Length: 400
Image (tube, rainbow, N blue to C red):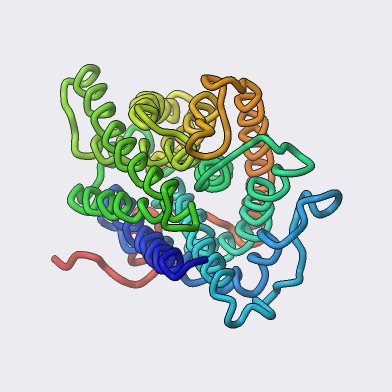
């Protein structure tokens, strides 16, 4: 790896770290004022615990293995526990650091679904267990196992399946165990600070350039294409969401614009380094429409996904992964999709997506049920009414 590539990866790593406080502000603004500090804490906690676990164990299990046979196609090994032997290896260490940021933000995404009612103590235990038992094997399968024995075809440039679908369906599993917020859906629970929401969305958009373009692991043409695709898809997502809001509801909202940006970013993530031309516009628009309608389903089916993690991240990730099967262009990323002659990629993408959906949901649901039995994962009704900032952290965001 050349010095310029290392410099770009150092910058990309920092950009993705910055996404976590951006996500905290994005989610925090959408909660009620009595729970905003709790949301900030849930997100930033992931920046504390996950990197420690990553260095100690999960990098080795999630990224170091042959990808062949059993167990090599299913999980890595313990050879790099504690990053043993990597001192001074700049090329490997920058990969460790960059991938560590992905591991940190993935469980943070789940926090938006459980807003307003999960014990912070339960979250403290849930995050490392989920990272070890769900995130680690899934990221290994997507980037190592499925490239060999399981399915050599499925691709995911920057984490559409490994991160967004994985976290989105895990969020659904946890909220089914956790239950609905008191008063939902009859009581309105609007965002308390749309300024935070827009600031958080802007930070996410900025950081996502490192998230996607950094996944080229070099300062090269694929990184440039990924950056351009990321910019365009987010823009298309915003315009698509605002348009459908205006047509259906009569108003284009601040929250809708921010949500459209995130939907576009999520959808282009698996494809950022594999598509070109007008493709990112299609990804952004299709994702915004699909995610807009998906978030309506929680009321219909009765699952309280507080901040629309399932509707945006799971559904947006699925949209991006499936569209990638059609639009992948070998001139950009070395793989052709259905529109360029290889319809088999669509099948492979669906297999990968369904596999992660099933595995992540089942294991996450089991983790949540065990924790609920062992320690209880939901705050008391009194604490929920009072607010989690005071009851979980003994703090208040806003003074009278």
